[in-house]
Length: 610
Image 1 (cartoon, rainbow, N blue to C red):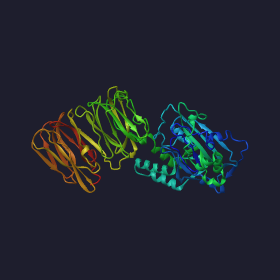
Image 2: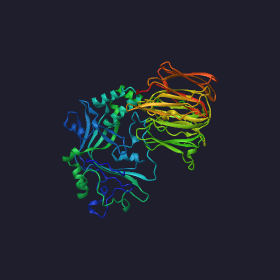
Image 3: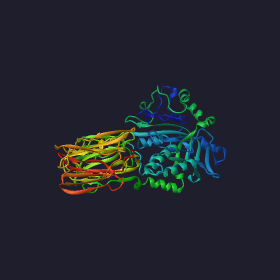
């Protein structure tokens, strides 16, 4: 690997990009350590086996080598040993420790990992990820797949066996603090809170624990072979002479060579520096827990609990792609293709580098994407606005948990009824849907329950009218969505179709009320007036009259019993109210030209911060 992992117990000699670890042959003290190391295990190795109990003095070896601590794989250069002891061996348990009395017990290992991720694990003495037992969260949190490459990965390790330890998970007792932390995490009220708490536990206590392991010292070199490189034996593999070794005891290795380093590494006086250098068997840390806790963790990370889906819009045909196919991941950016009339294609790039889509038009090399909506650290999508017909997806717009709203992709004025995809503040995972070679035909938002906005206000919608006029979305003017409320409505004060509609949204920031006005919706001329609501006054019902392409009249009712009627007596009567009695009018979106043609009323629970 291009970045070496360094510790005092394992000397790590890493390749530099595609240059293999090897020392320049012209410098006598810098010959390749592979050639100086024994090629086979000598026949005169002395091995003693101990059947130890936890109160034996050699039991301290487990503590000393860090065997009682878990290992986490999160991060670019894992595995990492965690900071806390996660288990102890049960009293009166007999377990196996084999002690190598001669320092000549050296195993030379050569592996050819399939990809860089496998190489990282093997480099650190662990099996490749595919050879490890599945963890409860592996089904949902699929690890990133190694990039395919024409280069051949190779890893050479020289492992000096000092102790071989074999444990049984049935004889291990989880640390009381670990079990208590898991219980508290699983008692959190929301799934997102439970998952977040468990993530912190796994970071501190580990994800897996080794059961069969080798303790001692090692040398390791891992990298790729270029087209003109071989593992040993020619100048293409020589290590630059001006670069010293990496890892433990580098000065000894540089000044005195391999034999002096070996004598230092295996000297019993330095036994405090020995660590786990090879793992042959491991189990998930959750296997230590009582059955009831394991079952609760399994349910928490189950597909049915982690994934939810919004109703689809557009063509009602079988899905051509699935938004959860890559597992649960953080979104880095959303790429879109559109032509100003319809959405043509979409793709999602995840933090780990995996990509879902494009699926149709965007797969052609000459069809460049139109735009990207990029998410920063800690950002995720909580709302997706879609304008669709029965046969096409005409426009889409995305809102982050930070309240940032993307531009509207696709049509700016035209056919398509509005819909809002949301899952109560949960984070967007991806999109399912279908397409042809020209455009998106159907779309469905897929959500993950493990990441959620704490200040999200659940919504409901009511829509009046249908038209092909200019689209508007007042979400952009909410300021702080958690505390936003309607404080004022401007309108045309004539007995005509509703026009001149202008809403003022107010919110609190650091104790100060901040207000934003929308543009005027419906530009037909006429005298205008303004209706101001009290700070604790909210609209709880809307009556009116409308036709298919015009909103003729609106009558607002507030929680204080006040009403305001605007417009004219024409069209068919309607009444809309929220499904929950405590909900209030939150914001509007719709379509307008000279007058109001379509309105979607978005209801929500009252402001969270008033």
